[in-house]
Image (cartoon, rainbow, N blue to C red; front, side, top):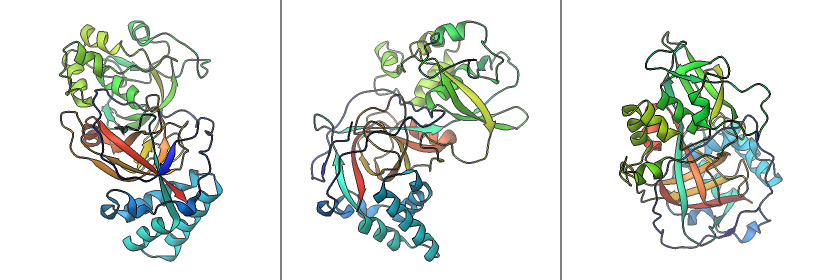
Length: 362
């Protein structure tokens, strides 16, 4: 399905109500390339200067993030602009902010993505969590991190979360974690573990049980466990930690999806997304590959978040480098915030009405 696109138009940003948490899982390999959007006559497209907030963008930071990741795009026009960026890096030492801005303004036109009803879409956020782990279980670290089941194939339907967690481990555990930490590690799809001896490892997505992801934020609010506007990721995690045991497991069981992991060395960088390249913090988004193509350069504009603790709006140039089971639709994005607790605290409060523009290479 191609993305619905139109030339940039002025308009008020409508508010979008709701409460939920986001989820992104990095698959073991990128899914098949989606169908390309319909051809666009770039000569008639508006310039990027028409984008809301364009003058305030850090064009130099955006340029470097683009140059590091643009090779994932495969179409001829995008490849040509990527080569231009590499040439500018070679010839300009250093690249200046004005040169970075000129690169985008000369090389791209813009078209806005639309929802079916013309209303704003939704921006959420995710991060690479860093959690404590143990080599052996104890009273606190009692939830096993399980590896891929033997013979697993993509799409295979296995037991639901409650059954998996209620029985003995199906394979030798890779590590042991607090239950609420493992639940959030599975929501994010990958993360980093620190063991008691100080050693570190990256927990990478390896398989899933084939069940659909179900967010627990809304049912927690409906049951009165959290206020309707207080379902940030940190609030949910704090509740699960405070009610660890049977009560918390009854809530996490509402999400039947279960993720299995592989442990890799921690290289100190950011995890790779579905496009196969490391995700630059605050410059990468997960998108619906039925509407976007990996490597697309995107302008996002999001404001007026409705969760308690929402810090500010978000606007700027980002790259489409990842996907996730909850990311669906042409105006839907999950912003990668980075690694660690600070990134997680901010990511958990992002639920903002969203507008998106695709920068089309000329």
